[in-house]
Image (cartoon, rainbow, N blue to C red):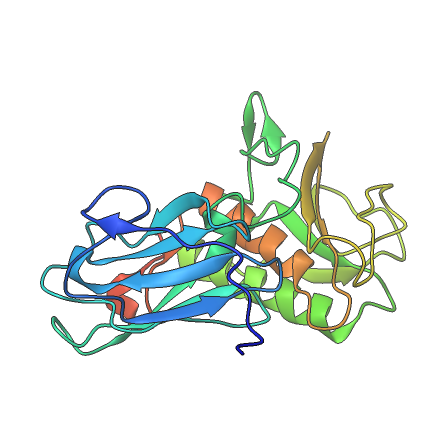
Length: 248
């Protein structure tokens, strides 16, 4: 006798939510929250289901033609990878935090622009830095990495390199605080028993980017990416052709 038990089954032929092309499924993977990702090859998309088999979202739909997206994989950092064997033979990478409800706790207080001058937050003014990136004096390597990535991306956008400073004092100008800091009171529950959540909080001239970074979690990284998305950036694939860094 079989020792397996069918917990749910579903899906019919078609192109709607929860339906699959007759050409078949190209791959399947599951993330740490129990969400299921299926490469719906003939419909040129990745379908996302929750742990009960309910259709949640489609990823990559409309990007490509032909029978693309022939496999799928999700890593512990919250990125989805899929291979397109029909169009350009490239590996595509998606940031799953852009596809709710992947993140278990949505970001709150996401109110960009940043540095207030009237109703506009400035990062750069007249070719000079108008903001600082702040990290704790004892910041983790993850936080340092995310702060440097933010610095590099803003430099690509503006041609100006914002300084990365520690929180030993309250610096003048706008502050982008990456990770926990004594200069704010923004917190996110930490630990494997908590969601891989993050917060983007604007308070006066301070923007706090804080997340759950326990173990392989990258909550603070998601907060940084979310801020950059709000500023017009986008990462839709590994090739620069599919990466959008607006220049000012």
